[in-house]
Image (cartoon, rainbow, N blue to C red; front, side, top):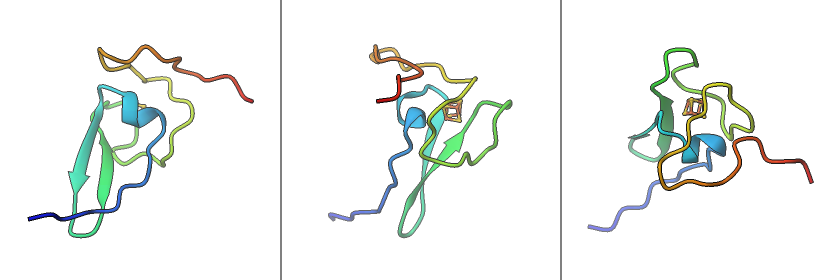
Length: 66
Ligand code: SF4
């Protein structure tokens, strides 16, 4: 079965160890497992004090504007 659910890009959350993706019938939501942050953060996340990159991620945590 090939089913496509819409998922809004979650910015920083998409590169964070605390992100858990929660599929619903039509969408996929970002759930944050870090207790310091809202359980369902407003995405796309641009800056987050609790961001921890996933192991393979080498990009900047706080990209410079431009
Ligand atoms: S800690 Fe911040 S960047 Fe990581 S998933 Fe939670 S809200 Fe997103």
